[in-house]
Amino acid sequence: MKPGDWADLTSITSSYNPVMYIAGTYGINWLLAIATIVGIIGPFVVGYIYLGGGTRVFFSMYRSKYVSQRVGEIHERYAIPYWALIIFGIVGLVLALLSPIPTVYTIIEEAVVAGYLGFSVVPVSLVVSRRQGLSGTYKVPAAAVIGALAFIFATWIVYWSGWPATPYGVLLVFVLSIIFAAIYRVRGAFRNSTWYIVYMLAMVLMTYIGQTAGGPVPILKFPWDMVTVTILAIAFYTWGVFSGLPKPYEAQPTKS
Image (cartoon, rainbow, N blue to C red; front, side, top):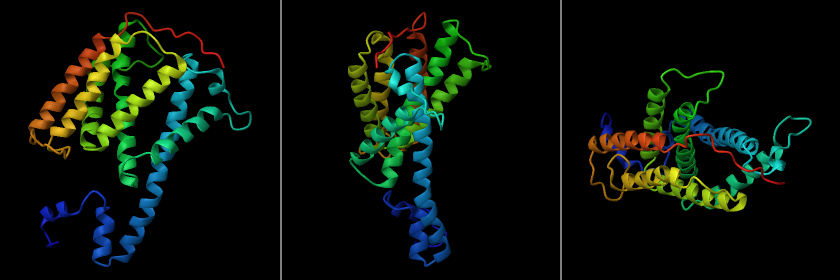
């Protein structure tokens, strides 16, 4: 690398941490030590956040009657839904081991894609809930606008995660959704979820042909790829809102 030549950073492939690469190449031992410690702790922090958040989502699925009562059992001492924690932890471990490119960086990227694909339905659900006449104690001002921005930002992150993280994250969501639907016999409202299926497929296509995403066929160059992704995000957000059910969906209780 030549001093002052930022273009040389492109020579550092995604399989290397750029800070560790530079520190190791130029013998900056103190920086290498810090980067190594952060590189070890960082993935554990990501895993801790996803484990806690996923357990909470799993528990809320029990309260919405999607999963069995056992998932909602609370530990007497620690006051946590321990079965939800155990199941989510085991599933996460299996998915990490099944990663087609099992490195720390790719696993984190895939987890980010799956996480933000899951988050992308939240702003849509917020607006749909308002249209259904539901509202909580705290009301988000300008929910439609804030929801649109949240959906666009989530779409950007999914797109920026690039190839092959995005298609693998989409595959995870698809497979787990099918397994979940089969186990808990989720039926109905499939037509209302069509927008979400097409949205995920569109994100895979964009990472394949977009320059910013590093796709194998970068037909769309920057900044036009970002313009296209943003327009698609607005279109799918609108489609999702107008695909919402006129009244809240009520699932049948699931037996233990």
